[in-house]
Length: 219
Image 1 (cartoon, rainbow, N blue to C red):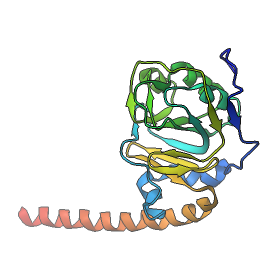
Image 2: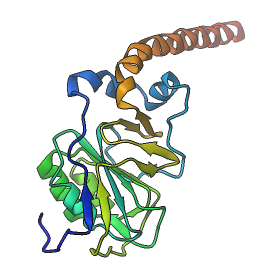
Image 3: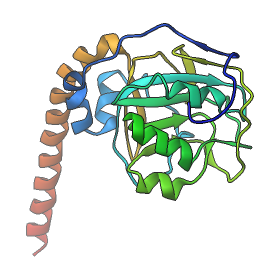
């Protein structure tokens, strides 16, 4: 850990499975809305979780963290458990008074291969986080920094954006928001999205053809 702080108050799950990058790649190639449609729109985070960085593509396995409101000690410790392709998913209990992630944590995320973060709380240094190529979603921005006292928990189910996210679930995000794919349903969703995309494209072609027909009739 890069900070000099005791982490005795932070509990860590011994391990959790993750989906392979090849298994989830297709989910990052289609809109998050299509992924949500494949799950009957039941695992879409609420609209209060918004994108605050310029990098809009989010895809990876959930590295879940539960923190005390306004305290990010467990986030620092969680990055010691990170694997390339992980996404930090932080239950900040909706607290907007203190930022849980900023540019220094962003630098550690880059070092560990973490691709982004979803925070049910606040963040800061969003321009710097954007320049690092990180996709960061949260409820708010504030310049106020966090405490580092704990307690916290890593690798446990967390409540974020109105959903329960389990460690190893897959996060898919774009400019519209974030969808959670339960790890055990990844294959099912990958198989379903092609049909959803084709159905939308067929309807789009019909709409555009009708538009062209109306324009030709008007001439």
